[in-house]
Length: 103
Image (cartoon, rainbow, N blue to C red; front, side, top):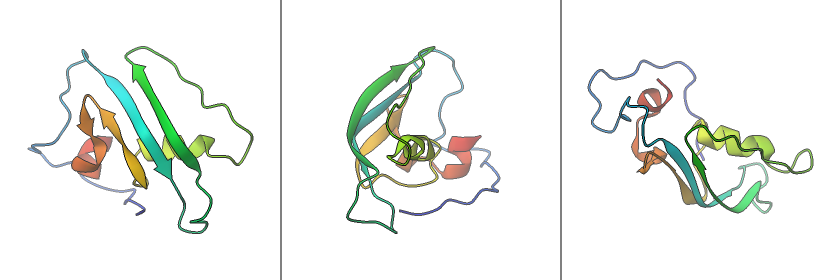
């Protein structure tokens, strides 16, 4: 679980950069489990799986303090998942340089 740099410069020619085309965009959470380093015995997310298609809206609805914002932080690639994976356009976000992913 690493905290990514907030200031970065996208590479000009990244092989793993996501295509800019609008079609085929979707996000897949596949069995995502996440634990913060400060509380490794308590998962913030435990086995989250869902597919979010283009032009769909999703709400993570849970009690306050139970991982709602953790899903967003993982999607923004501020942290790495403990197990499982997050795919954007069928590419695991951990294989994309953070600066390219966020550009």
